[in-house]
Amino acid sequence: MKTAWSSLKSAFAALLLVAAVLEASWNISADIDLRYRLSEWQHHDGGLHVAGASVRKTFSDRKGDRLTLFGLVEAHDNFSMVMAHELYGLYKGPLGSWNVSVGRFGLPYGLLTGFSASRLLYTMPHHELLGYDVDNGIMLSGVRGMLDYGISVTQGYGPHHLPDFSGHGLATGRLGFTLGDAGETIVGVSGVYGTTAHAHDRDMTIDRALGALDMTMYLGRLLCRAELSGGMVNSKLIGAGFVAIDYALLPRLDVNLGITGVRNGTETHDAWFTGVTHTSRWFTLRGGYQYAYYNEPHHQVAVQLYRLFAANF
Amino acid sequence: MNRTIRWRYSSIGCLLLIFSALGVFAQDVYLCVWRNPERTMTKIFPEARDYISANQKISPSQLEEIEKRIGTKVLPGQRDVFLYFNMTGDNGEHVGTIIAVTQKGEFGAVEFVFGLDPAGVIEDLYVQRARERDQRFKKRDFLDLFVGQNVRGASNLEKTYQGAKTPGTTAIIEGLEKALTAYDVLVLNGENKD
Image (cartoon, chains in turn red, brown):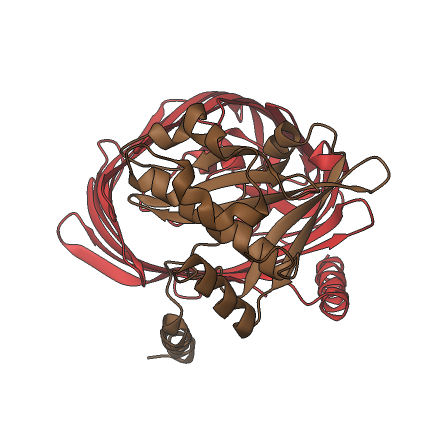
């Protein structure tokens, strides 16, 4: 098992080395997310939330771009966990009408296709719904006019466990429609069926059968995202809703709102976040307050210092 | 403090040092990021069958020439590499060029995309993302003013629009002027120099 994973990493490293020899241009980015949290007005903690580094390289043949290699390594919670969050190769068909991705990639489900809250102060309900936002396997995706699609078959291990063959088995898919000249409205319908590993035990399984509707709207200075999911997790009914709103109040100041609600069997989880984002020339400063009626902590204040570095070489 | 904790905090310290060193590069960079490019590409060039991404390196002398011709500084993140897409037909022949532009607006970046036919004439133009207060720059009657303009006319684009100036209209005009000039200097090697 460990050998298989090591071989996979070695093969990818070898491919990156080949790429380095063949072409000189790369897209490289790195980011760092430092946070301070005050919970229940009493307990506080701070440190590195996430540091990430990614590299992307695209190869072309005579007719077009063909192969993209992508890797994203992340360190979480003061380096207590370091992992390859994404690591995949993507073979692109003509004009992206079909693409095949192999490796560890983002699951095509709901808002996850084009959005992640991993560097934001609020959370999305995908941990309860899918278990993970990325998984190891194969995906077919593409764009045809206003339509985009993605369907994947993955192992269900997520990014925290070592891959093994053949895994538990998880099928995920999303069909999206982009409307408007500038793609102002995006709607999507998704589904997932299969089994995932428990976050702390790879052999402990969770059955999932879910569907979702998602919507993203760009309305001038207002950006709205919403997702509704429902289905069964381990034979228990689950329903979840997520709404995020960003409003550009001033040229460098956004107001943010994030609401998450999950009803899983008889348990309810909620989070109501409101905050601001200031983007300076050198870093992004976010701050906000989160209230949870059902969860603990009920009150949490968080401040984030975020820095992104990105370049093409 | 045990060894693991010392290692973790040393790592954070190193990261902060690295990012401080990177501080010479502002975070406020304007990379031309384009999500789902195929959708707009096929609207501009329906006959295209595929595309090849091209990263053209910008030398200091080329950057100097571009800045001299447009009269302003090229934005951070766009000073080293010029990204464009060669659109290809059934047999891999060149049917046009797509350029994605990111320009500074009042409320963040204004991202738009335009296509050049093989003769260097603007085929069409679409705004991708922008959060401006005044949305008139997204209207077709404004964008259509630039359809049919040539690489050669980059320095005259400002005269094309006689209406009220907004951060959005300025971003489109300045972004177009910058991209056309860069394409001329870097890809056409200045053969259309005004």
